[in-house]
Length: 407
Ligand code: PLP
Image (cartoon, rainbow, N blue to C red; front, side, top):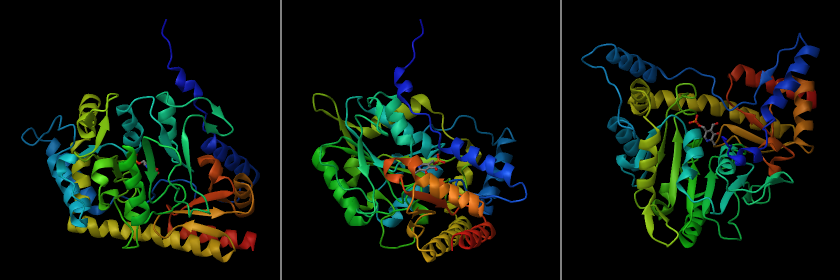
């Protein structure tokens, strides 16, 4: 008899986006003349940068001729891309990362989800609350939690991000082994200072823990004093892995390219306390289960680091950040307390009412769709997330509607 992995039955169905879709459909049916503006999703809306498109086309042409055709590439990614990443994203910022510590992949979603496979099922896992749900659900699937009760999985340590701690969680009281951190944060838009990250790195070193640092929104950091990588923090090479993506900075959400940095100094331990290089484990896992990203996509990603690519990406990020600023300014003017939107494309807004109540208010009174914070965890209750990923025209229109409706 074929038996299932019963951990899957512990998973809570995520009703967040289907509930949103249902409410939007009901609104549209009742108000067929009114056009909805969607500021709820985390997907980009603008075309790929021209430099990437040109590189993409050129690589497709290479694939069309026998002489330049390429089949399977290195599982970890082509050297040209790994080197461009190490040089531009890390070495240029004083972070000591080598090309062979970079693993190219088809998404930070898969990498953040898969990385936990390297570790024992009896470790203590700490996740932020509110949280990007992938960190939680993949640990549930792996059997690292007990059942769901009172809005949380028993057995996980929740790192609460609240107004009181500025949405950067405090160090846990208990000892944990695997720590998920995400800055700039989805959904709160909060960022962590160098000093705050240093505390986490020190904690991990003291506890022989590992930090999985999700920097998918790094490109949106505007403040030059904020760290863009955890590897800017001394000692992080021993205790941290970093996830990055071309999805949000270069519009690759549909094209798919990301990467994970695993420093060779990073260690995990056998039950008898023997140190094992996490790099070797991930390399084994990656080469066994993954055949890398298509050649044209890797060439398109490489173009992000060309002179033109860099400028085009800067303009793309600036476009979304203008939206973010506009949203934050307008919601603040209406008296709402906002966080994010200064170094991230998300604005986290306290509504002074339940998340879904606030969602319904914006939908029914202004025809604007946001994301209720409660969908990201207990600490998200009372908040909504507004995304800057839309056209400037729609963002302006949405804010004018909200202002008119809520003033
Ligand atoms: N990490 C965070 C925090 C995200 O919000 C997202 C996407 O929304 C991802 C990772 C996924 O990125 P990718 O498109 O590279 O899979």
